[in-house]
Length: 351
View 1 (cartoon, rainbow, N blue to C red):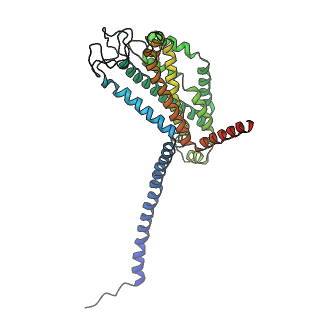
View 2: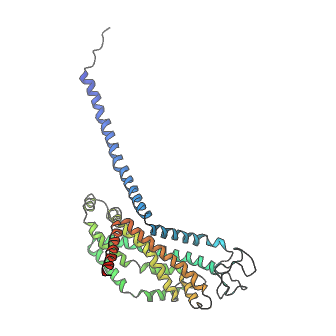
């Protein structure tokens, strides 16, 4: 039987080498994909861990976060510790001081008025819980809305420039000179103090200053090489703003969101204190302060309990915003320490 001649060694190696590059290229592509996606995700997680670690090392920021969490839990679960609603009236306990014993002699949370009652017999504890809920709802909604509007319009004005920039900045300057307080007063009186309209008005007239700051920072980010490269590659403008411009000023957005909560709470409190905020039967911390200020001598608990909760809320958000600033920009904390050290040394030298 004739035997087939063996295949030359060069051809065998040729077949093997023909398939080797394909496997090598495929493996290289997979390795390249893993190298470009996985480290990016890990890098983002690493940044979050770094920011969280910096924040956790700030004792005052952790205290502020704990205070805010406790206030949120109090607003959500505080109503479970009383049998009264904020609109219920106890005619046997009108102007009742804080007590663990209710009007009917019941002990515990069943009939007790923890914070006392007002002149109408409403339980102040239930009103403070509901007022904190309403104030947090207004503050968080307005802060989210103003931050989103400012980021979008400021980023669009900085990226496109030209007539878009003129329209956005013209609107900003126009709204800055509009008498906001008069509009708030008119809207409040015409809508009966509805908290939803208060959110709308505070959002519409609360984004301008932040939009100017974002516009100034986005102008510098727009000239970076990666933004120019993304533009030449045909990436859409909205995607460039979303993926390249706004993330580079995310620290400003986060810090201003926290500060916006404080500003909105104080604005709502001032409006309600002057009688232009939320009207009864609905209550907020500001309206409770306005009602308690008139009876401060006869019934001081009507003022001091809402004032204490409002103070804790503003202090907690101020500590959180300060901690966020130090977490995103560690040099700010070091510069403050150096400034304090210089001031203390100068005081010692002057003495």
